[in-house]
Image (cartoon, rainbow, N blue to C red; front, side, top):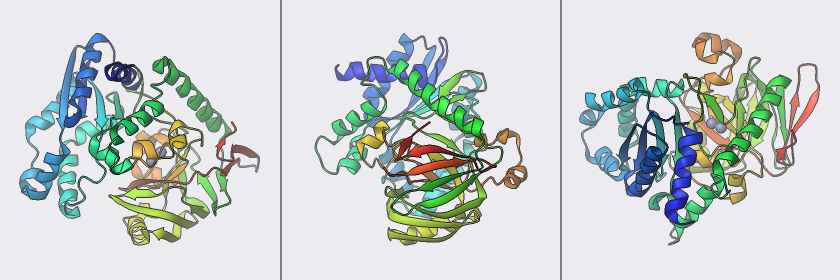
Length: 408
Ligand code: ZN
Ligand code: ZN
């Protein structure tokens, strides 16, 4: 297959399985400007699948960086009305929304942290209506990735074939190398759904994690926890996949019932810096001590962010044989790295991982043991020898993972 053919396959997969674009629907595509070749193929494919309209918004992170470095803070934080109206129009006219990401993970590393946070906050406020609708699945959306030179070189350093190497990995992890990627994904999603159904039926009280490198921890689950996987239902009833690739089945831990020590399995890239080879010890749901061979201060700073960063907001299960895990590459991109290994997240939980969670108040959620924080930082804990056992209220034990992979 030539480059255009494989990109067309990619576009079909994302439009049909990712956002489930319907005939007669509009689609908005956000794409890095240096990969406008990709946006063009996505647009052409969308029309061939019956799109009514395709709107493309190019992102240019270098121009963003110049603005953040040299621009006036107040001026940049005053988001023009037309930009907000553009988002509102997507909601009003029921567009679906494809975000193609290829960001250099360290592009904003020279921007003063406070200035960046100030502008980010203003943008979040201006586009709140749109992002709330995205979080509540009021619009069908999908985030995918495409290699850019700056991102690929971050992974493969100065290898002149970096972009091609990253593209190869994306092809594999997106199952574009199968003869029919759309049905490969239908099958993949049904396996993940079955695992989530099994775990939901068991109503485990807690999970026990053990391996030889120092993980020995019991993680309590919220009484009304819900295990989720790849597929979600939009408010219009149509199913879609918000993140591609995705390999995880995940739920909400109880923020007062976590006891023991967990050791990291992969480096954690946080705010453009690396924390590596670390252990975290919990008592009654709260972090009581941490140590790291690299980035210990940064890790300590992270857990001091707010009251929620002293506990966990997500437990996610991913087998050691997932295509991303097998690649053995650190992508510096959450979409990939969190799908390479079982992980926990320091910080806030997703309301959707609790029964009726999106209708409960913060107070009601808190009573259940739901962890709330402005941070949500995934860190990888899945080693090749990790065993995970589910324990029910009456003490019945069910193996879920043996030697790093699913046994259910
Ligand atoms: Zn996750
Ligand atoms: Zn997460």
